[in-house]
Length: 225
Length: 225
DNA sequence: TAATATACTTAGCAATTGGCAAGAAATGAA
DNA sequence: TTCATTTCTTGCCAATTGCTAAGTATATTA
Image 1 (cartoon, rainbow over the protein chains, first blue to last red):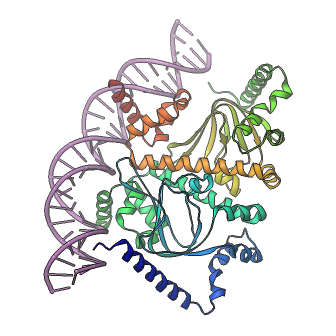
Image 2 (cartoon, rainbow over the protein chains, first blue to last red):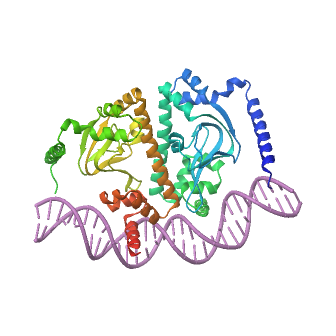
Image 3 (cartoon, chains in turn green, yellow, red, orange):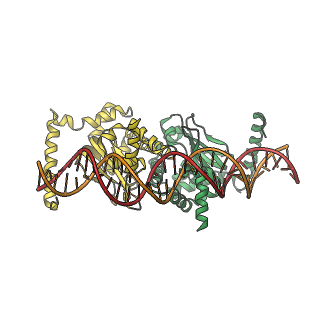
């Protein structure tokens, strides 16, 4: 089916409204709910005090990204530092031959943004979209810098997000270099089982650095044992 | 030859002194020289003004790391944020089978430290040593935080170092996933030719995610063309 | 319900890469 | 220099992974 762009927009808008209604109805107190998740998250980091968490959370705006909708498109500058509350998202790039390569998966609790584009204000080489209907809270680059400037605690938080992403990628690189595809698959299955409940095997395969064919073969081998 | 630890220390100390003398003699004005390189470097980042660069540089201490000497050993906490002025260094880890895997190379101008260990105050899983006699300037975690706290410009600098390392690793990961070993070799040769003048092919091979045997074969294939 | 698109699996063959072992070359120490 | 060590190359064979194409399963839409 091919919808006209106009019709597609209308449907998207309607779905948006529908999801918003469900989302708000799921909470007894709208105001209370709105920033609850993100404030709660800040508190659990042990970097930010309870009062400060509310203060910081108050600057975030909510956002809905429907399934398959783009959140960041390559060529544009990433200007949203998005805390993911519900749903599941995926970052991907294209290699020289035009194949999609999954560069990251995001689960609730993760901060979704493209580091280099966001901080250097350069065009992103990556795309990010929603794998399932997602809800998150974001601030812009400017807002983030203002908060960093005025709140040392939030600076610490920001740094820890960067460091976490960096060292996760280091671990992945080491496993890419020193493990076989089967070992990488088994480890991902153990460490991030949620990925296998949300993402397609094709996108997981490219995240593991193999083709979907190979992944299928590996799964068959394992199921034999 | 196996030297007694005592003798080895003495020789190391003597070499240290020798290098220091050469190093100082190479400059007409000792004080002037001492922090020149690092201050100059800060200025070229465009993040830090000239006066501020001198101020920041004044907090750094000099350090010599002789060829093959360890700068960071796994199991210890990285507490030096080291600006490399001269020489060449290498970070490496061991995989499950005990093979060395090169995780990074550092040339003059690079900041040498292990991100996760340094910022999280946790035991490093990586080692860093000097490939050639090296000279650098460092500050501790505490000093860095003090400077971050008092100098927004230096914070920006610190963030840009993190972001740079992160995005370089992302690029490397994409090339690991989407390119053949030969393509990765050719690209590294073009983008970082200095590595091939300093490091052994064995350590370069593990950086590229292949065995030294494969690298040798790839070099042969290319030389045929 | 049937039709269509998408996701996943499977098979056969080709290309890449690894493992092992031997040899050549380069480096460093006595 | 000579000896020893390390680095690098080479050849052979095995294992892994990719490529193409076909087939099956699942989900979505008309």
